[in-house]
Image 1 (cartoon, rainbow, N blue to C red):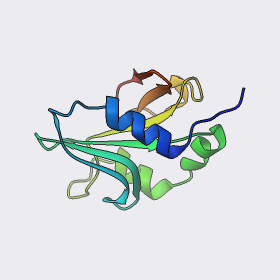
Image 2: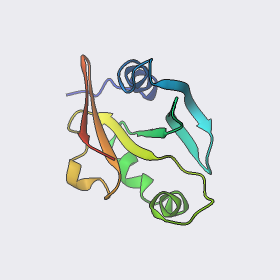
Image 3: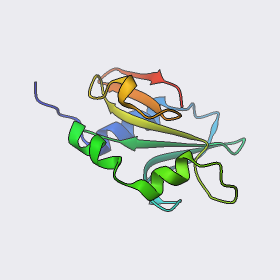
Image 4: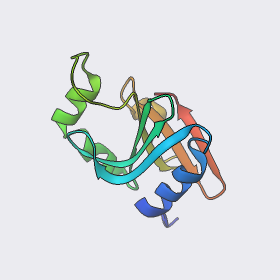
Length: 121
C-alpha cells in the first residue's frame, strides 16, 4: 500500500484535531523555537508546549534517534533548557509501534478521518 502522507498533510490534521481552538494560543509549523526545528508546535493559553515530530517513513523515525543533542535535552532534568512540555511523534497509522517510541515520548496515529493519541507523552 502506497503511503500518500506528506509532512504538510499531517500538519493540517494536527492543526485541526490536536488541541481545540479554545485551548491553543499559538501554533507554529517548521520553526526553530528550541535548538532544533519543530515540525508542529502548539502553545496553550496556560503556557504548555506540545511538540509533534512528524515522520512519514520508518527510516526517518529511526534516523531521528541519531540526533543525540536534541534527545539529551528532551530527556534531561537540567533546568534552564528550553524544551516542550510534551513531545509526540505523529505518524501515519501503524507506521511505528508504541513500544518503539522512547519512554516519556508520545505517539499519535494519523488517519484520513481520525487522529488518535496511542501513547501519552
